[in-house]
Amino acid sequence: MADRWFVSRLLKGPMAHLEWKEHYRIGYKDIDAQHRALLDLLNQLIDLMDQGGPQAGISRIFQRLCHYATTHFANEEAYLRAAGYPELPHQQAEHAVFIQQLLTFDQTYNPTDPTLLEETRRFLQDWFLRHILESDLDYVPHMKRFYNQAPIRGILFDFGQVLCRFDNARFLEGLSSFCEKPAATLKEALYRDSTLTQDYEAGRIDSKAFLGGVSDLCGMQLPEADFIRIYTDIFTPIQASFDLIRKLKPAYRIGLISNTSPWHFEHAIRTSEVFPLLDAVTLSFEVGACKPDPRLFEDALQKLGLLAEECVFIDDQAAFAQAATDHLLHGITYTTPVALMAQLRQAKVEF
Figure 1 (spheres, rainbow, N blue to C red):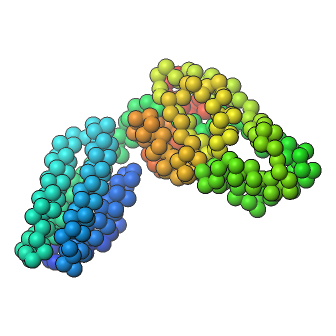
Figure 2 (figure 1 turned 30 degrees about the vertical axis):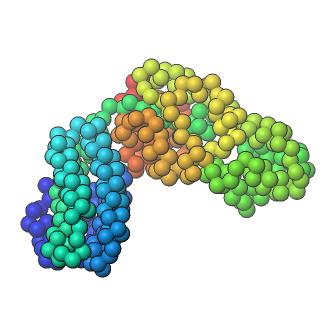
């Protein structure tokens, strides 16, 4: 429990504007980002009220604040419910009071009543600080314990070099055979001097634009069918990983998180023999971001219906595995099938 004397001192005296401070940090998932967004809306509302803004404008901010707060509270309560937090009913009660009071203020707002304006400002400021510094900080130790105690229910895999090996040299050699430029020259042009691959995988360009960009680098228009063939014929299944998924499937939800492109997905990932066993598939070009962006982890967790603490994520890139751990999944860096089996057993995954 936060020191109540500190909170009372923090709330004492007039406060026309609330600034985010480091000691407001919860340090759990996306809660801090949501609190900051909530604070921004609170400040917008308070500023507009201080300026004697029109009732319609005030009402719009009240509605935005109410909508965002409702979404944030639902998100927070879902985490706490899944983690078995014993004080969840108290949290829910405080959330309900805030929403109800917002609705009341919206209905009774009167820019000519200074007493009501001060009451509204004081409630918004006091509630925000008390709730974060007392109620929210109280659940942090429980959630930290939950990370080590939560049973593993989901296993998420990267695709390239974890489920299938890939060799971009085969693609470059195929391009070279078309345009008669050395593969080494094409490699520098495509991967060092161009962002075509990153843009394609992040969904910033479509397949037509990608083909056009590579054609420009090659100095000729590449035929689409032949291009797709050489672009996607770079993968070799890692049979041990396929066998592992089959063993895990009866007891765990299985997911995929891949930085990939539409053509790699359609002609390599979707056609792999273990694709039908996947319960959730998160693709960078659909999310509009690439690992280690946390949006990919959140997309996969939402599709699986699991908390981060309940999931293992396996990637050959140590930085991506660490990003998953930072987002409260259990990140594992893939090196060999034998090492992976040992790491999964250490994470208490049974197969």
